Length: 318
Image (cartoon, rainbow, N blue to C red; front, side, top):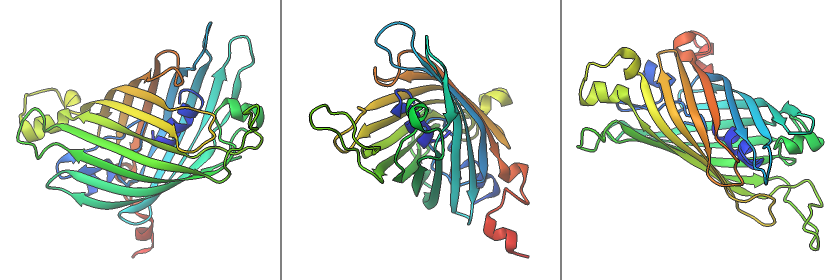
């Protein structure tokens, strides 16, 4: 799962040189997992099919509305280090005493370039731009309830990953930090009535978006620090803590700063990964109770190495 879906959920009060490296995102010996709330820094051939999330929404009293999301993502390399991604999903918002609102999210298209890899220091940087396409999902009152922005927007984004393997302390070396930072630029700025402060157009405010993940790789611990004889299943686990956030960057705005934590585990095999995290709202605007997010992730480099697992430019070479 990836960043824009986290931001969309937050906006309604919730919420890729070796063959192996292309699939899983390595810098040196450190593998960066596919995170659920934010986008990982790699450029790859992969897909999330699907990502399911559930989060009770903010409420002043009584039973809370609950947002359910079934999201999908497809990532494809055009060249070795440049690719695109498509994100979409379907939402259900159950409201006590009212009809359930449901519909598609707005489509998000991302272009990303892996700009720098330092294997010695396990450091990776990518740059990208996301385009959120308004009116490609549910619209009207239903779309508003589901958090679909009424205006398209562009989000220049910076991504990074840093493994701690260059720190000469054994127990610290399996740690890794990944993150992203984006600035959402609305096509149409929000305008409000100066007396009532009610919106008078279908614009949105600009905003900062981003997040961090802190990972501890049992695989790295066993292969690069010390082999404790753990079962193979355990060696493929990565405990992870994530934080996704959004904050207004222009006035007027309809939403305040929102934070969403994810705490859980990732299991990464050769051709797939499974992630499960508890969702913890960071403030009252984000949610009212704990939620959950789960993802099944496919790596096409290993599943379909002669087709979807290779860059598009290689399809036309003899």
